[in-house]
Image (tube, rainbow, N blue to C red):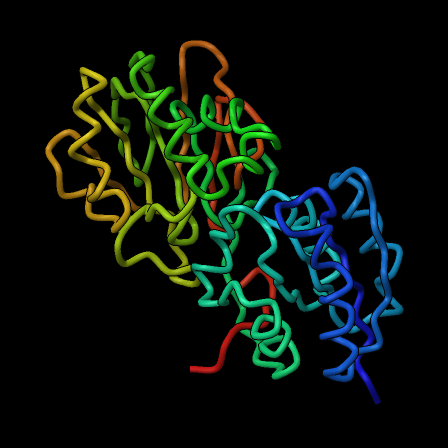
Length: 291
């Protein structure tokens, strides 16, 4: 009996519209009974998944990290296995999981049926796959419009980041972790569940999405130009070794600021400080390549 697959593709993602038919053909060729659903608003994805919960065997989401984030709460609720088709700009979750950008290869991984239970992060009741952060990344998110992504692709992150960095101003925050209270003056606090975020940067070089821990770094630079030598290290997750970067690990982390500051989860602004971050071990099952 063929598997019943609910296919949800963000038609507004970088490749979603042009590759939608290709995805359907590829999945049907591999034996899936594909149920097609589309929505103009990614926030409606959860409702669609819940509506089909008793009629499907797998949910396949095509798009970027923001589209996946819009579906994650319903995936947790229904516990339906998740298939990932990397059709966005950055595809950081796919990179963390080792899923290639090739559509045919990503479909084959789902057909192979190798499931891995992964952790999720949770901040103020909102789940995230990759990273939740405040500071620089929020300003980058606010400027990363669909038009900018379409024009520059993956390079949009670097282009916008350079614009934002020189305007950055440090802010004060209190980080509570492992029974400690730490006061910091920082331009960015990032809390990672997976390894990659922001177009391929790594939170920590050895982070995995099933290590049952959160990795925090606080970027405590005084002048905007100090981030420039850090950038190559941030691609590898080695920035944590630098003197002006604070690195911490824990299962639960609280962050307080003098005034509410927006928090970016997987590329979408979803909540504000004060914030409590938690790791939810083995929260959902995802199709990944065989080792």
